[in-house]
Length: 419
Image 1 (tube, rainbow, N blue to C red):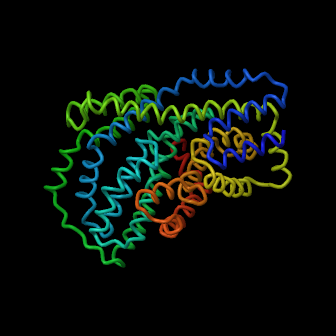
Image 2: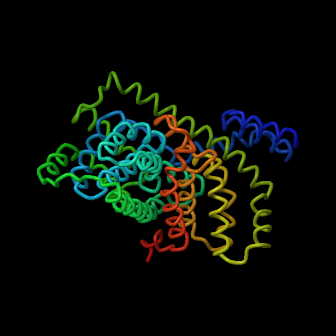
Image 3: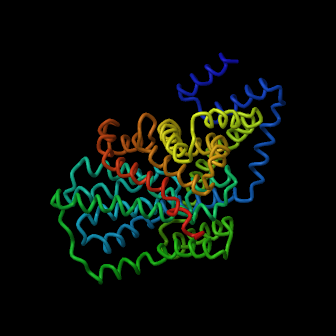
């Protein structure tokens, strides 16, 4: 048994697809527990019957359609018209644009690849230093994970059973706080780098607003629909996909239904399929771990050494930072969440607050070695060594770690809407 586990670990290190490792691990675990392997298939069926599952492909389709169309360029033009006059305005445009793009596409790597080509020349043209540009773009790729309709929040809600609506509401303020902190750093950096600013023009703002009126209306509709209780997550996902397709294909005519739609559908099914197959395999494996009472054994060990909620949250953050540095966010959600939920309940951590803490840690994990996905994607996109990118992101990493402490130890930031 130990030999089989070691073989699976070795295969994972060598690059074997994660779903295959999890599926094989599930078979090994079921055999050792004298359980029929069909329990894994039952978990996949249970996953397929989740009412909110359909929201994942619909939001993914909407995000990829936006990426294929011209919504990104229109929004960047608007943000630049509004914020470009400020010291560090171009950097703030980068932060806001990337966070909005990541929230809709659900993929940090897509943000770096798609927006890097647009924003990096703008930052260089504004005379930002090379390392600052690299660090800002590498960091900004994961900034939208706490904003609706983030796929990470959808997946966390499905796996944990926590209300997705409540997670969406709770992630807004922490997400905004992070954007403000990074923007302040950018404004502080601008005078030091002697960054020129552009003159503010109401005419440019009006022109840019008119050009992307349909794009800025979408998040407003999502917020009002979800937070106002008018539509469910599934309904708003369907409305979003329809709205984006009509805007890009009919109103702005940025995409051609016959030429571009097949590619969009292929990209959507590829991304969604990879997530769902990992989710299905992982849920089967974690169910076996729960049947073996692994969470209860972990709880017993933790209770022997941890006396307070403060200590638990500190250890939880350290553990999740390590997890974020070793695993991608979707794998971490489906594998780790079922294990830490009972521990959090024992120490009276609010389930919604726990979800935001979890995602905040994994957001930081995107830019930490050895498996920080943002570092690898940025390295490929900008043709720079990973070590140089990590040094470039280090000031931003320090800010995000301080932000994590605020989110962890000031629950009001996530539970304000209940008070």
